[in-house]
Structures are given as C-alpha cells and as structure tokens.
Length: 94
Image 1 (cartoon, rainbow, N blue to C red):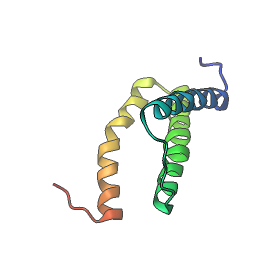
Image 2 (cartoon, rainbow, N blue to C red):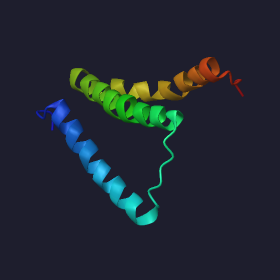
Image 3 (cartoon, helix red, strand yellow):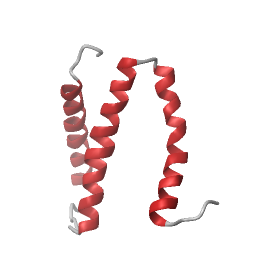
Image 4 (tube, helix red, strand yellow):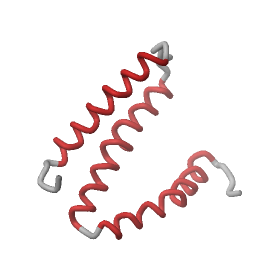
C-alpha cells in the first residue's frame, strides 16, 4: 500500500471503523449521548489528533525512514504521557 495516497487510505480506514463501531453500538448500546463540553472536546481530540493526526504522522515517518526507528518512538509514549499528566493535571509520579 505504499503507493496509496495517505488521505485516501486514512479516509477508508476511518469510514470502515465508523461503520463497524456504529453497528456494534447500535446492537449493544442504547445510543444515548450526553452532549457536554468535556465530551465534545474529548471526542474531537480523539478523532482529529489521535486518529487522523497521529496515524498520518506515523505513516509519513514510516515512508521516510526505517520501520524499526519509527517503532522505537512507541517507547516514548508512556513517558511523554506521564509528563503531560504531571504538568496538565498535577498528578504525582508513583
């Protein structure tokens, strides 16, 4: 799939995942949503930054370099997350 456009591939992935998620939610949940500012912000962050942004950056890095170097970035995720929680939420390290 190296020849596929990043936007097209990402769109196909997200649309497919949305259909599967909606199907499962429709059959196992009541689909009641409490629209609060926190929920809207969290959903937007997960949709735009985590899904589209992070995966796009990952694919771009993989196209430009070795996969092993890109995979090494995954080891930074827990440490960076801990630092973000410390700074933003004021939680202590355990």
